Image 1: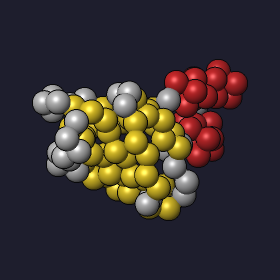
Image 2: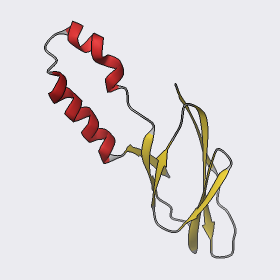
Image 3: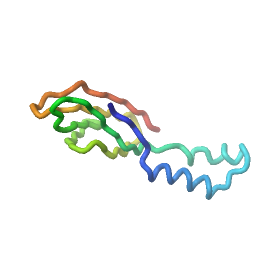
Image 4: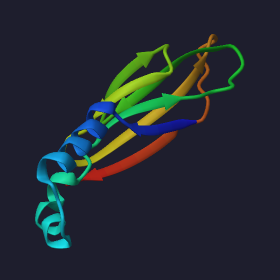
Length: 105
């Protein structure tokens, strides 16, 4: 399983904006709405019950990563991004791929 969670710095940025802008009316919010849009900066939380688990293989837009921990930081650029997560056992056999496409503009 792959869980996408916003990074703490992104959550903090939104909270600070809310304090700085002192939005009181719907018009205030509408005028500043683009500042509140979430940026595609995620922590991937990886969970598997694969027997003899060894590591994760993550591919983001054709760039490959091999990790052993169960969290991975992702910062995406504008456009369409493809994220592929595979769970690999100690024999090098992959579980099913988890494929996610995200469009950010």
